Length: 329
Image (cartoon, rainbow, N blue to C red; front, side):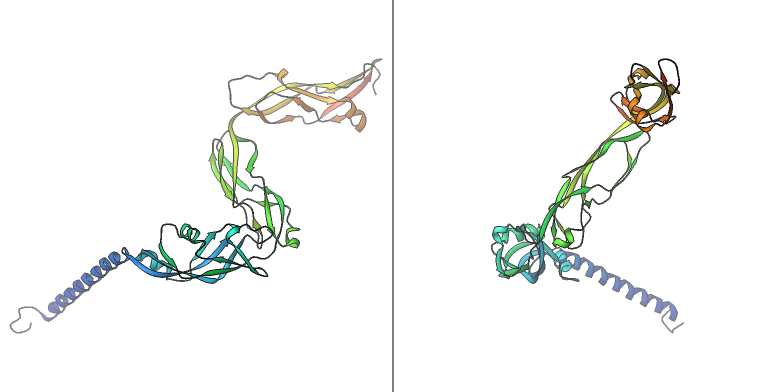
């Protein structure tokens, strides 16, 4: 114990350390409060952007990114300014009418920044209050391209809830798009695919928007495709349905064995009751003569509305041709 202090030496060290720690924490807290306050304030600063042009000049590429840098002065919160100045230059996509894009030379087109001021403001959103534009113009390389129209093919991974199934295929609008690019490259493309439409637990009609799977150096006339699919609740039933013969000459008879098959089907859920006479299963005499095969697959010629899918057992029936005299052929 130090003379006159009344406090052991190690306890005094711990006390001093605790006081320093509290002081550092207080300073850190004060700094954080100051930083949050400072970043929430508005500042007028110069900002730089890499600009991607989106336009629709016939026979030319629809998008291009300028090598020039767009410089503006505007007011924004400190948070936004800090994000803008960390890392790479942020990209700004500006949609411009062809009338505001001027041909310069070769594949180079130029855009006057003041002319497209409203487009720049729109691209900035509500993040920046634009004060003025420093850059005078931006150049873009828009090479010549050809185009062709191709169908859009849906790509889907859909899991239906119990006793629900689709009625028909997925419908797309539009069901085809114009693609733009090098003629040789376009010659290898017959269709394009949607991004995977993934849904689970589906128990009713679905709809939405999906993108198109990108192809390198190819541009599309549409960014998104609207899709829809009708989904209904179904019930599963089965019944014995007689098989008839059609097209048999008057002096002949076509014997069918078995004379009926089991038809298993799914139909839209409702209180309506179906009977065997609601279905018409038949084999055609001309098919029998043409193939000279005793086994034929009955065709479901008629069925009630609301039947979604069906299968029969057995799949084949035996056919025996008799003359009216009773002799077997």
